[in-house]
Image 1 (cartoon, helix red, strand yellow):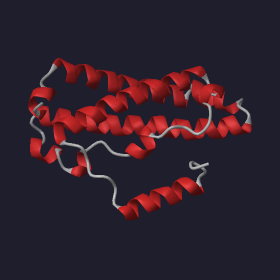
Image 2 (image 1 turned 90 degrees about the vertical axis):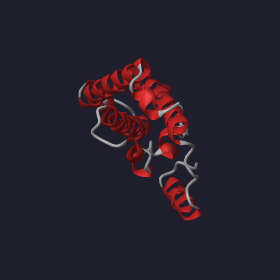
Image 3 (image 1 turned 120 degrees about the vertical axis):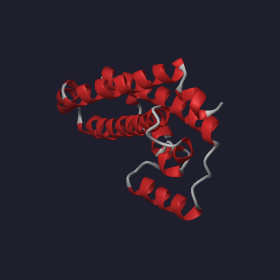
Length: 158
């Protein structure tokens, strides 16, 4: 699939609209009701809430950024070849696609719903990114070692 054909498609419009609506919905939840719900969680669940709300935020920031770049290409504000540069590709895959070590069922239902929906959107955009621009190279061993060290330091590996 060619980038211009995709950005001119109904599929792009739907994905763009869905992504931006999910960003807005998530922001409203996390700044309002979610903040209130988090106050009443037991300590361990509150820590899980903090981590998973960061994950959903990261997913949506990455998705929105990618979608905005594609729209800029469609609108002629950016050259298509520039959008292929690594800096404009979908990022943070290890965080966004990583599984939570704990059971998220202890979290508020609306956050769990946002986690599932943001994961679905992120995975769909990751597939589109790979189809349009090719699969990215795996992280360099030094980067991988640093990511592993961070994961271990913050308990993601346990």
